[in-house]
Amino acid sequence: MKKLIALMMAIVMVLCCFAACGSSGGDNGGDEAAETKRIAMICDPVGVNPFLTQIVDKLEEMKAAQTYPMDYTVVECADDTAWSENIRASVEEGYDMILVVGWQGADPLNEVATQFPDKAQYAIIDTTCDNENVKSYIFKPQEAAYLIGIIAASVSADAGQPDGPFGGVHANPGQGSFEWRWGYMEGARSVNPELQMDDFLFNYTKSYTDAAIAKELALQQAAQGCVFINAASAVADYGTFEAAAEKGFYTSGQDTDMTNPENPNIITSQVKYTGVVAEMAVKEFFETGLQPGVVTLGLADGVVGAVYITDDGTNPRNEVLTDEIVARAREAAEKIKSGELVLEVPLEEDYSF
Image (cartoon, rainbow, N blue to C red; front, side, top):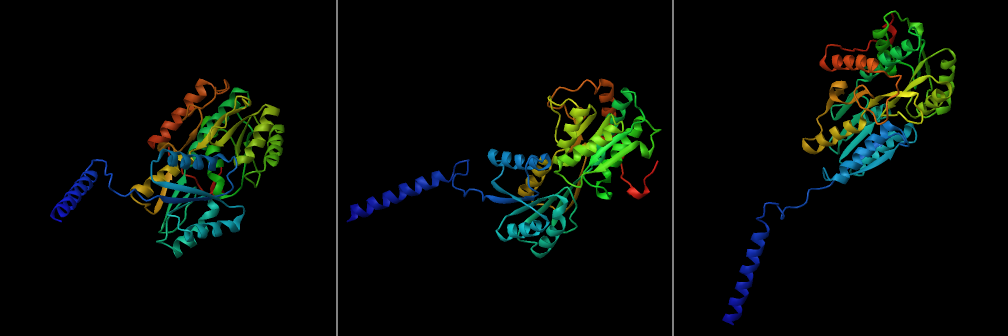
């Protein structure tokens, strides 16, 4: 009996030794794995919209790299009523971070974040949600549009039309989108101060996806003599690109590098790196928790810009975009980054020249 007891005590001591050794390693092998946090991205239907695909790609990249213990779901909103339903459902289903993308989500997010302040952490990209529980990330698109305006005026001057007209096929009229038009016009006027308001033609698709109407509007502007037409209607821009290839005017893309060797008339793009912003939000969520408030991002933050000016581009540069034009636009970009050139967007009703 005594031998049995001694044997049992020896076994217990060995097991205790193994347990102690297993928990004393430098890799914290005995600690529990970090809890996986779930992120719900709520947005318009993604499709091929580069504004949204950049964010989806970034979330997938971060998940695959195991940068943080995270999983994510993309919740697409087919219509206006779906925004409120999807935001609320994501909170009720226990998602830890609600990432809303687009101005349509501001009011529904405000309502849900007010009602459930502690159920999740909330962020929105591309608009402001005036709520003490929400982190808002907004852009300074006028800074990038200013660079596009410089390119438009310079290319037109080289083509023998320094006074334009300068075209623009944009998504929507109104103050909410005026920053794109204002920056474009001011950039062009920095090249030719003699330009007048009626030297600029703007038409609106009233849609982010209707490429057919964008093409029709671009063809109308081309018929009026535009050498350069600024495309700013998201996925509908493909219609403007098609018109450019047919009629020979020059144009620009939006959100990401839309230059294409098969369509050399797309000579630049006004970029908005939404994936970079999404990474900022996720990083803050995991490292400090989202700090509610509004952060405004521009050229100096590496979040907006223009292809071949602030970015190298993925395709060969069209020779119409000369070294002289690039140097002029880059000089302006550096002035914006340093604060020497400040671009404050006025009310559209107060703007004239």
